[in-house]
Length: 84
Image 1 (cartoon, rainbow, N blue to C red):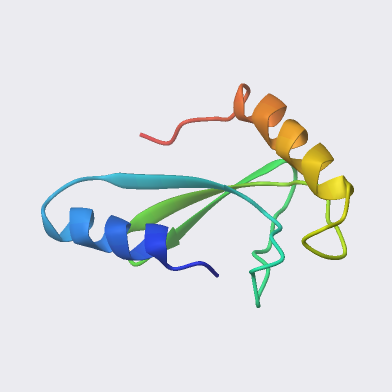
Image 2: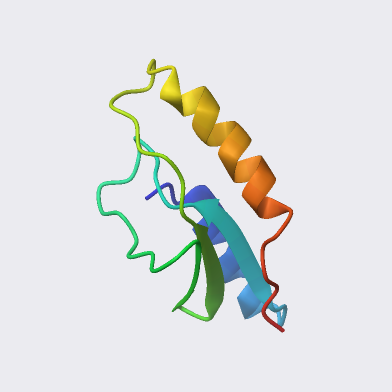
């Protein structure tokens, strides 16, 4: 997992904010993939709500399917549920 967003989220939670991070379910940076059931899955990690959006997997950073994944993520983001 890429930790920049997580650590920023932890800092905000420690300062009293409710934090929700929206991410695609696949990245070539992830060592462990999130478990996504359906198109959208909420997961609470250390008081940070993650919304995982199921996206296309690709083989490496230079794979053309990666660009398709960006577009897929953008379209699905328009229909993403919000957890209050």
